[in-house]
Length: 239
Image 1 (tube, rainbow, N blue to C red):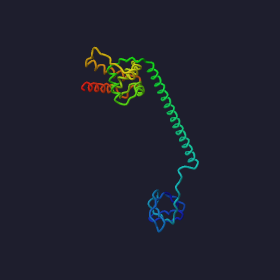
Image 2 (tube, rainbow, N blue to C red; image 1 turned 60 degrees about the vertical axis):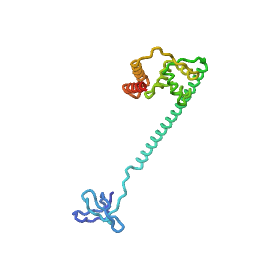
Image 3 (cartoon, rainbow, N blue to C red; image 1 turned 120 degrees about the vertical axis):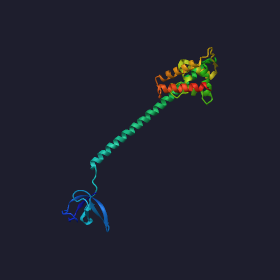
Image 4 (cartoon, rainbow, N blue to C red; image 1 turned 120 degrees about the horizontal axis):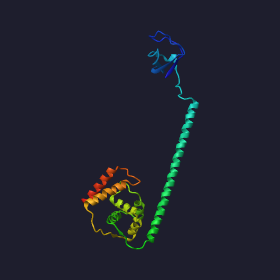
């Protein structure tokens, strides 16, 4: 704080007279009756005690002028408005995107229904791994619309073997056949020559590499993807 000398005096143990009007940096020291005495903490008078009757405490200086403060306030309010407008725009874009996705889903379901209606009641023949995937997902309350919603997507790094089997089957152009199997039932394709253990392992690794190289890419490195697939393969072989 700053104090101003209003009545000059000669401080104790100091050679110079402290003149009226001098402004000093000081701190409150102790009370004399109901008033604070002070002690200078800077300059040539540092350490001297100043009785309250010889000085007055000056008000704190403002860091900014009124015009500077008003300017900063206006700039802050403008930035706040820009931020609020940006958030509103993001909310609007998000809402529009959700509506678009809902429309896409509705159109897809309509196409599926028309496709199913146009199919004959012929029972399709599907590979063993696809049949196993259907059985596995039917253990959960998966409807035909759930199949359409989840398995017409790109392969993702955390898909299990059943999810991958269905997605690969669809990407190979068998989407209609899968829907027909879900509605009308299916028979399992007969395999004359069962592949060997090494052939199955090789196919597992090749599929992992193909999935990792897909346009959407994985969050994991290729070595991690292959290691996870191989671990899953051997776990299945040991069951």
